[in-house]
Length: 455
Ligand code: PMP
Image (cartoon, rainbow, N blue to C red; front, side):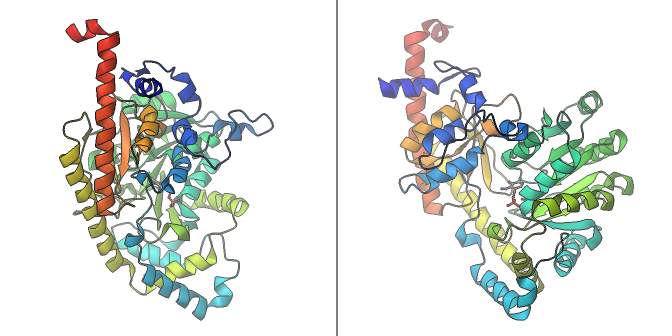
């Protein structure tokens, strides 16, 4: 009976659970992950002594899922972190050695808030090779692009300000904007975006529009050049900042994505572009290094906010990255990484084709990045997660990636961290889980909704 009740909780009727009110899930978008983890303290839903900002944000579902990844019986297709096999550990060790041997006094000393100039110069040089005109004065090194998102929202957003976000989008960005009290407006950026995009902008008067144009997290989608140009032109006309998050742009399988918004922007449009890129996916996330480029005037305020936040990104990490790039190690490593992720994605596609075609699971092939974004009609993927973990597989439900009106039938599968064999096992387990879910959902229809079956 208990098993039956669990199954019935994840059958969906349109957007509603059959036997579970939606409100309890919406209250806390991370409930699915939180229910499952055991060791971490729970966040109270409404901590009365804490700031309004603290009350606005709950911990991220993905962070909570980390607790599951340690369980040996669960194959995780959830986390979006690079496989150890994709990290150039020898190259990183060498670069760290050079950093500490050649300039130990610098490596262990305070640095400036903008970041280590020789590293910024190498970044600018690489950017120029991809058509982005930039100089070091227009860049700041941040402690991961997560910090860049936090700084951008603290410098630009006041409580109640409107922020346009894609639907769905990276939930770490949603959290940063929510913390600042932003009023999030979801916009679909499929194909050419909504016909009435300009009307939405005129009506909402957004402070900024946050975009992941290349191999997006979670969708893997690439934004068309036409839509990139349209958004740039609207930003110039209606005076809002475009935050271009390029976390995955260099992880393409075959062809590079279209030019970045920063590269496409005219001189006037550039005044509205904030570009974020990260070393996390192309070098090592543990270095916690990313870079931001923005108009110089805005960057000055970003640097003040950064001083309040952490003074500067780790000097040792910056020197390590500098020596790695300076030795010419990044480009060959990137070629290997692209090849590696392409193989991983192919392994996942083969497993999906072999195991999931007789379920309602549907997905598109990504051309880069780390994720398959799937739809499973008839299933509430948040509610099913607990059952999936029982079947020995973890994914990220779609729900937390939406600022509003979540599509509960969506889920994200990562091919980044698991081995090819593990991907096969994980997809097989997901298929078993979906088969049992579909069966129970069909049984439920027979016992409770005979009229629907004959309609
Ligand atoms: N943006 C996107 C789209 C991401 O997926 C992530 C993390 N996976 C980040 C930013 C943050 O990355 P980091 O702080 O490691 O640079």
